Image 1 (cartoon, rainbow, N blue to C red):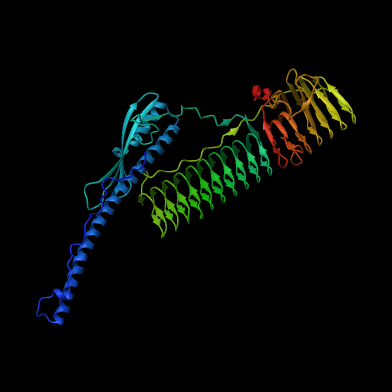
Image 2 (image 1 turned 90 degrees about the vertical axis):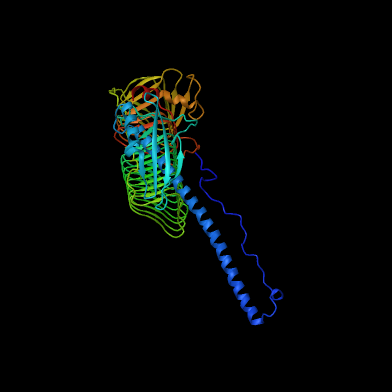
Length: 579
């Protein structure tokens, strides 16, 4: 629904000229009139001229005032209708989520009853209101309805209201097709555990300039400067996002979320306490916070902001492209902007240069200081409804803990001396240790070791011409620095891990009930599950390629990454079958 170019009821200025065209001159004066009398006539004529002009000005002024009044009335009715449309959309979204976990037919009936509360009449203030009329088009799945909203303006001097009507409020289609209502099925969202899937569990710190293919999950999560996470970030406490960081999905925290300068989140932010967006940060979705939300200078939210506390938009182009809903106060500072509407449980303050493009509905007062702008209705002491309350942040689901397998190591140790090679057949062994500068070859099948310690400059060859390679280790797994990983698809020819099909990493799985460590220039091809910690040390890979092609996950420990770490996510066949 676009706003009309001409508003009903608007008056135009009349096309008139001055009613006085007389001109007096000395030559036209009657004979016998002395110059003194002539001067008096000039005075009288001037007074008459001014009076006539005054009447003309009054006429124009009255006409202009009438036009402006009509315009104001139509605008007020228009913005009242927009407030009603927004209310319908907000309640639609609320009930579609099925907050009471009831049958779909019941939640649809509850939604319709909500819209029809008080006969569908919602009072914004003494002069503005909107009325919702609902027509049920289908009471069975797929549920459909039509909501018509009439915004009305009525002042104390005129008993005839000015109305503006919006048909199919909230509809995506046209032609009276109505709106589809598709609620969540009961119990559909009861399971708050997420698949470990493409989540790096648990990664408390993503190091400087690292790139994580997939999501990050941890007891707490810190994304250091210039790092990238391609999917969601989930924390059981806080999330801190450093400078110039990019998150490709949502961010969810059990406590607070802090974005530092020039960082970007592609999805939504959910935080049970507060959210602070640093200078020139961008959230392309919406923000949901249990506490305060602060947008510092130049920060932008392209969706809506929902806050259980106060919302503050900083100076210098802090922007919310949608609407703001707050339990407390909303403050729009210098050159800040809310493109649509603001609903505040307490006060709304718009300071010099601040803008609210739509309506401002406050449970307290609406104050627009000099130089501030509210494009729509300003309604103080507004009850809810029609004032829309914020949507609470979603709880962060926990990522499922991958199950550890049960296995027992053997007693036959394998020890490989300096600069020696070893081809190892699948089987059950004791410890595996190497002296350095070795070539170790594994084949399709299952290996079990009590511990693994491979010294520096190890060439780790994986023969993937046949079955998958599965490695179980009771104790720790340690690779010395500068490991080289080669992969074969025919059992004869071996290529670098970066020169083969990366999906071959799905054929390799390593599980340790201790910790996994890959030292300087450490690399891995396949999935690693560690009961304790996973550590990659050293800086960026010397080749500029990803250090890991595969997946990393821990049960009780944490994942520690080197600076400029990068990975390509490939989950192993074993993990897909058993996690």
